[in-house]
Image 1 (cartoon, one colour):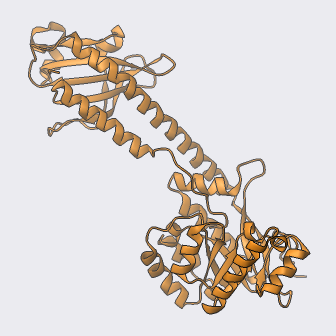
Image 2 (image 1 turned 180 degrees about the vertical axis):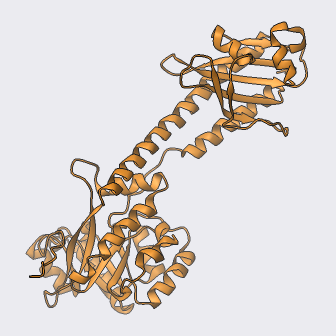
Image 3 (image 1 turned 90 degrees about the vertical axis):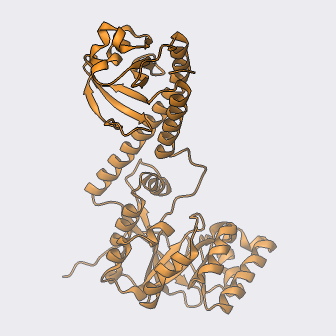
Length: 403
């Protein structure tokens, strides 16, 4: 070696995913292997007891077809890593054949080795960072260990980031498992009112989670981050649609684009009268493949399913959704409805959307109507449907008891 549910998560700037962080660790180890002129470089993690009895290979890079893989575990005894662990210092062995204590390493085909300890940010010993070759290397010196010492700090930053992300992932999965065990999430329904007749013509299903926990958007965002977003959204959909026999008109549910493409959606909708189901696509969910989404929706829409674009007027993405999807309902975002009666610009935008809806055979649903003045302006503009606290608050479904 030589030198949808009903509340879709808002998007944000996410930290690097665990997979991305592990790729970064592998890339760093590969750069190190090349720098050291080694055949193999790896990170070894001590067993839970940290007593020197076991090691697990956390990450391994090698261009050779060696029988060594990430995740392999083996006793530490007799390995050169054991020397590093015992001494808490670097170990440099240019030629294992000339080192009596390295006989077992030589028997395993290791000709040269250099390893350094890895310490967590709290100073405790985590494991080792090692490079080795099948041939002896007379040029191997303490300076090579210094290279590994420098790299060891960066390695541990990546390892601790991975571990923290995995701990967060497990915590989310545990919360979801607890929610599932209690039959959650719960569902409340907010009526959608025909503003021309004041009749309840449908309801939006809203997910509710245990008191004292995070808001629904955080629950759904966390689930999506750990790969359980579709499962949680579809669980909410199944619960929401169970209320259809006891509700007038339609039930609308929010689903992310990813869940609309999930095979589980067909199972969740099986048996439901699709002409009484509305799927809302939120402005805050990015759509990378409109063609794929439209293809997935086509057979469902042919069977009666209707589609709404939520949060229209809150940003550019919602207008793109409207143009690409040509929804059955265009839902005006609460930020556009709030104070509409005293804001000429908001009224003008709402009027433009009403005109667009009329030309595309869509219905407008104004969200967040909270005052009589807002309602009056919306009615004057020709908005056909609305929902909000001024009209009706969300409430659990009350099923009459047969008597």
